[in-house]
Image: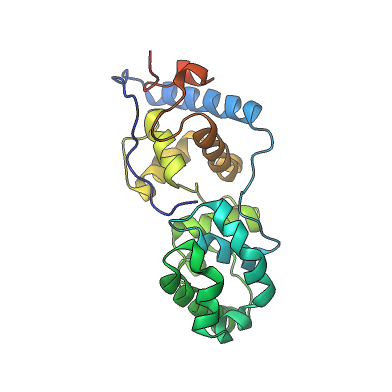
Length: 230
């Protein structure tokens, strides 16, 4: 996953004026169709516990999930606990994560993360948004990933580039800032589906509604999408 959501590229059509109730109904149908199309949608970052997930999500900034999953087996073997991240040498850690990009900043964040977990949380990953976003390298998106996928807590919607792009194309938001996009999506979907919604939109973004050339002719959401190509 990639950290920042950007304005979408692709076909745009004039959006019909719709009421809040109509938009909510359309959002409900979008969700139902996505659930049918992607019944196995899940977090693409390999992890066995909350610590591994927060680390993998930090590494996923400006990096693909595939690349992160290639790096994490060796990293998790070398650093199974917060203490290992706090104590590992900078050079060794950078070497383990170099291929994820921005590795110096990420190494600094992971070392700080390990120290913070030990000093403030008894070596455990906290379970609240307020505590998570105080950790080095952890913003709201990462916190939502961890809460939703490691702890089963739907505190918000994860907005990455795919989610931001599809939300805009589907006419569910006019915002380009990830936090504002999330605020627009939250009232449209049931809380128990917030974490799943992100996985569904990510799968659809990768398979159909890609950034450069969306496959509108093959899209099962085309009749619900104001941006679908004729």
